[in-house]
Structure formats: C-alpha cells, structure tokens
Length: 197
Image (cartoon, rainbow, N blue to C red; front, side):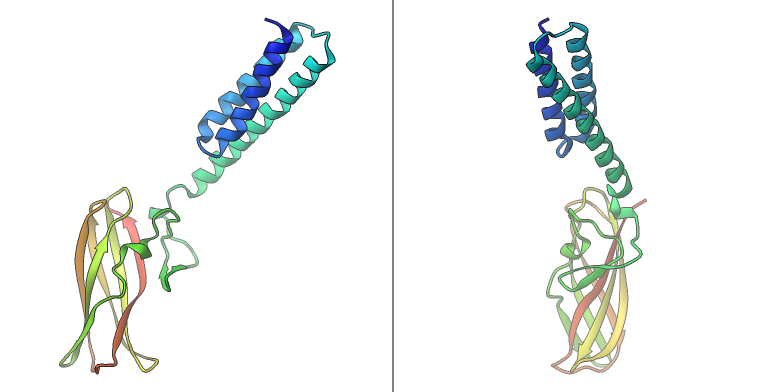
C-alpha cells in the first residue's frame, strides 16, 4: 500500500476517533490505536515525500489524542454515570426543590407534580400529588413536604413511595397535625430517588 494512502487513513481514523469520543467513547480508543498502526505501516514503507511524513505525524498525534480523550471520558463516566444510586454530599436544586441523589439527565425534582395540591382540615394539614418515574429503572422516592403561612413553617412530613416502575405515574399523600387557614401553602422541599432493589 502506498505511504500516502496509509497516512491519509491514519489521519482520518484520528479525526473520527476524536469526533466520536464525545458521542461513543468506547469507539475512540480502538480508532486511535488503528490510526497509530497505520502510521507504523506508513513509516515501514519508508515514504520519500515530506507531505506523506507530515500526514503520518498528524495521524499519530490525532490517534494519541483520540485514545487520551476516550480514556478520560471513560474515567469521568465511571465516576458519575449512574448518579441515581449515589447520594451527593451537597444537595442540588431544580425548581427550588432539593435532592441528594442528582441525575443530570432526569432530575428527580422533575418527577414531582408542581405545584403540589394541598388542603387544610380540622387539626391537620394535608398534601397529595403525583409522581412519574422518568428514569430507566424502578425507583423508590423519599418526598419531604413543608406547609407554610405568612413566611412561617407550620409543619413538615415525609412520604416514602416504593418500587415505581419506569414511566409509571403514581399518587402519594402526606399529612401532619397542625392548624392552617386559606393562606396556608405547601410545597415539596426535597425529593430523593434511589433504585429499587
């Protein structure tokens, strides 16, 4: 095979490896390795044209970058690919709702019906709503609800919902003893989603 052809192949493989590293990182590493192999084939055929040597060196550099990018993305994915079962040390907030189990693709806060319907009864504050599991695995939810009036917290309670299938919507209710008025509001303060065992 002519040195120019193998040098072009090495260059193309390096470019494709870098481009695909951000989309399908497992493909980037083999493409980078093949690019380096084609560079070796190019230099084994002893190219006489300086352009062929430059193309081969560019293919070598791009192949190395593709391998490095693929490896870096693999490491970062293994650190934070599935956040649904990992609790964070600091809560993250979406729409004013906290969570200790963040998921950038499907935040648990987006699973909750908003605004949360609430009502006041004699000696009781109640809230109920819907939750939809937007993740890809069955999940358990812990929902913390607070009731407030005129800037003061009247009460708080927690609801636990187990084994919600992916895509399924279910209802929940939570209540706490307390006195309220027509000005009493309720909201979800925090929602945590963990995989069902």
